[in-house]
Length: 394
Image 1: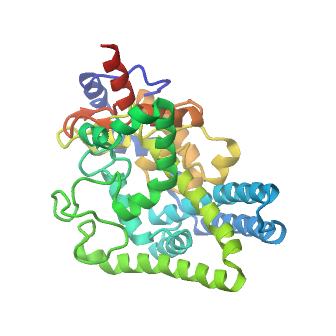
Image 2: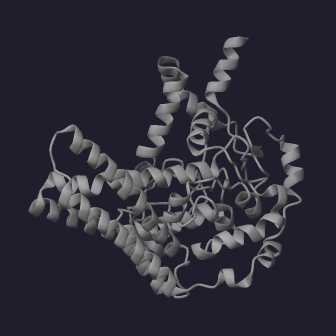
Image 3: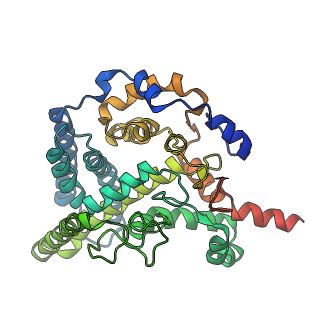
């Protein structure tokens, strides 16, 4: 389905009729050239080395030439550094993510070593995230089991935001939504399971307490007992990185080390959340209850969007080939563009691409997508802004 704006929303019956005609995963795999599934460890490691070299060069320039002082020039330069370094380092994040999917190499030890190192230095608990992200792919847009950007119910959104919306107004509310997502979204998901699954994959029931990505104890209902040691290793990797930053701060100066690391870190987080938010949230992208969901339906809710050429290259096409990624998650990123082109004729109207410029798309999503009415059937995101505006006209 090619979406242009959020006005032409299919009814549940229409959506169901369309989904029944979805191609099978076998038909889609057959459409993709066989070599697109082949992995080259050497080529993947080249991209890892390239991205780390870019980050090192940018970091060296900042360390040597940007002063730590309260001046307009210094503030502007450190801000520019954070944006550039964070944007480049997002490519490192994507490669760690590729390791988590097994796309770096045919050898799992290589995938997990690369993924663990790259994600740990970016404060990502690798193995715990790997498992929750696997469930995101396995249960995409499932209203009970879907991971990340799983929409809230109407009553919860009204309880949290109605008074705030009435106080600050529509535009300020949209800006607040964008800031909350981009700045706090990632740590809130890791620490508090924000927008995560409603049902424990271990018990099959509603969580009795909020899980997180760092707790390796039996009380964490997000992970089975067999993963507890890996969760411990994930937390250890993050702790080791923080300890390393603390040592460097003590030796080289806390202010400069903090500027070098945490500014880009926030930008990486913003890119990460921005990608996943826009890839899986739209007024026309349905979420499914237990009675309607199938794997192929969930995968087909994924949206490809246009990104500037340099950003798309640095981020290994994660935003322009995400439909393909959800269909074949272990495919190397350097084969995804060719595979996407091969998939388009088979997917036809089911291929979701939104040409809306990114800034406008983010504004639209923050304005229009806040909640769903229920947890069964086919649910489309609804807007508290639109509903309250309509109520005022009655």
